[in-house]
Amino acid sequence: MNILTTLIVTDADKASAQGVINALHSTEEGASTQGDTLFSVELTDGTDTFWATTGFLYGDDLTALINTDYIQYACFPADLDKALEANSLTRVEVESEEI
Image 1 (cartoon, rainbow, N blue to C red):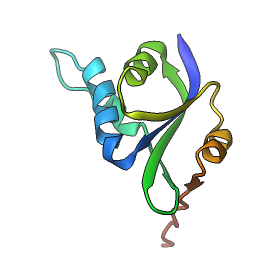
Image 2: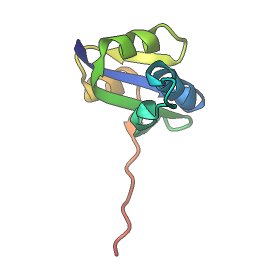
Image 3: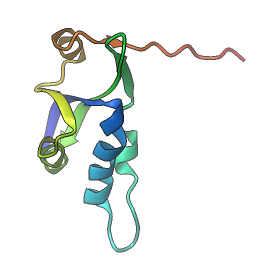
């Protein structure tokens, strides 16, 4: 079952949280990179960096992440604005380079 959620991790825990999903989906045929696309929204509290993922996650993926110490905040259903407000965070706007 897919669950609509927003999850936030610290910068220090981002790679580990992604690794949980990669490990969950890796097989004998090879390593998964499915987790590499999670936590792509950069956030800040003015001092520290955080990362968010928002959208549908497989129930097993969500359970695996929640059962770690990596998740700083979880919101069901997904509401990034509510998560930002609850944690006093702002989204880091990435300026795109013009060609």
